Length: 318
Ligand code: ADP
Image: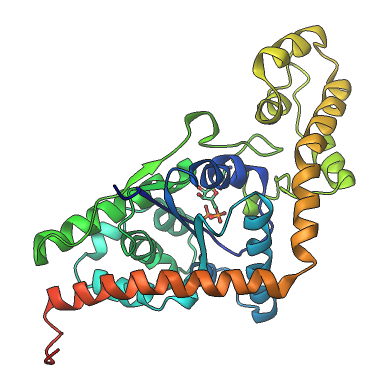
């Protein structure tokens, strides 16, 4: 029996943080033995926030090193970048013609941007459609993501249904996979950890950077247990042990933060070292990405042939 398929992606929009790792990336590694996986670098998605070509190229290489450093095995998971598989944007266009504006206007990302009176580019508005194409091209069963992406996976299901109803069964309906305890990893200020809030702990931070981030965690002196410190601490140490420690050290914020720094360092140091090893041979890493793109392209091409057949544009004799 063939294995089930997972698909997920990370934008090359900056340094990954421990929220990305625990919320999504760790699951890619955990799933790689049981599933056929696709871990994409979704560079075209990042275009709406990143318009510096040099930075784009660097960031793409960085995500590739991040993927390798966390333990993704290219023999088990296809590592590829979106711009190497043009079928993603082709399918996005076809999906654009089967769904409506009011449907997409319900997306949180669009509503948030509109509430902030931002001038929204068409790409941002269309983001969930391109994401649907990413997911649906590969016959995906599950999409491991953080809670912020739940709605986007639901939109992908809706789009698949709409297409299937119009043209006949073509796409499998994917499920999201969200780990409850890490669905929303909080940042140093208690809000969702996010690149755009400046409240992150980078996944490959050096010791001094970890220290700076942890010392900056917002604590409220009225609390016995500093909840923002605890919420991050429980990602890297067993909760039973932590409950005991935090009860013993009630009110001793500095000591608790120092302990968190040490625990984060223990967790991050091996990943950081791994990453440095992979960074020594960039051409080798790039060859992995290129081969992954070629492998993904074959699957995507076959699916697009089916789609073109279904919509009636395949008119030449075979
Ligand atoms: P986006 O910013 O569009 O979510 P990212 O590349 O930043 O894209 O996110 C990569 C993955 O990390 C996504 O699956 C996202 O849901 C997840 N993620 C991001 N922030 C958090 C967080 N604070 N807690 C849990 N998961 C997160």
